[in-house]
Length: 477
Image (cartoon, rainbow, N blue to C red; front, side, top):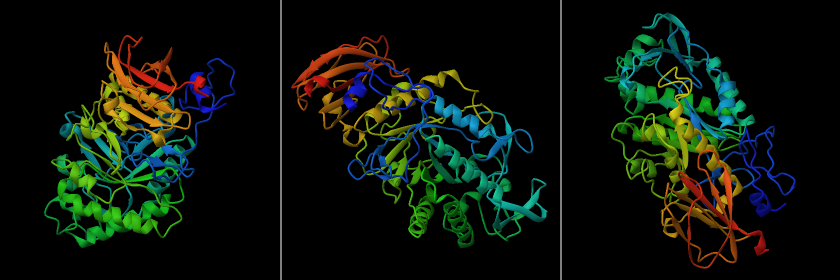
């Protein structure tokens, strides 16, 4: 069965929610028990369409999915904190058809959530560095030896990346976390690098905790470098890895982040595999220009330029993972998912998930976001993504991804509730099959064919927001 047969029979898998080819029967089939596609890699920027990554086969890969804070370092009100059930979390991601998650680290040993507008207090562990003593840190536990790593941390990190890969999920591994050291009360006193918390003689010359994420202190930078190499040593042979330098670090961290990006790239050149390295929104007051100017392969911007409400079209300078974490904190909606996708971005969602750290457990207001992410991935996998580019000028709604495949032109258009849309089909030939998708549940409605060669107007049969999908008709063979 060729790709057009696949599209027109509507063969979506259910449950794991990724596109697959099934034997043609002329009717819709479901493959609820199909195994997910493996996370084939390592990823590299696609040579022809730099808005996306490519896997080891050269196939363009669209990344989309959810992430949550304690998916590597446990957080919770008890000491030790409750263990995060990572396998159940992977089931959750698979249920919504996601293929990406962001694996968080956390540098502080404890923190309260007043700085995030809540009133919880958390202990966090494990940490990369071993707690050997002698002597007690400020939390009453053995001091850290910053020259020794805790195998439990790296064993957990590797096992979780491996488990994600088996489920077809790419994992961005966060090396450092910069938000907590800035905004948590007494954060510096709760950090392993505080001089009272380690036996390595580190931190006595630090005037303020945020300076550890700069190049002001060569001994601290050396510890960071050794740790970064350890992460690479732990994960280099795995295919589904991406790296992120630091979550929401302050703008003075720029040169330090650039330094660690270059370090990772240089070190991986001595290894069997090379993986993408990312730099994300600097909070507070960072500029997206700093991200675009960086040596990173991928970035996650702040709202500057419309990434929250009217995302600008990706131009291929960087692969862009448009993350609700950096746009709302907690927030997002299904229209944002589709707007991001159709502007050539890779949308991802900061999910409160079990509600233990922040937010409400499985908050139902975010169900449309979770579901819409999975639907966009199904469309991306069933399209010739490598040829698809943002073409806002082709649709009256201004949200259109279009491209040329071997069979002809293809168009995916977002249509807000109650709006008729005109689409310029001048680049197409013959006839196009007309299908409408519910942008949240993915239900597909066929509406016959449209003639190519000029502007055509389409009215949605879906009562709410809708997605118009125009594909080369089988009659064009």
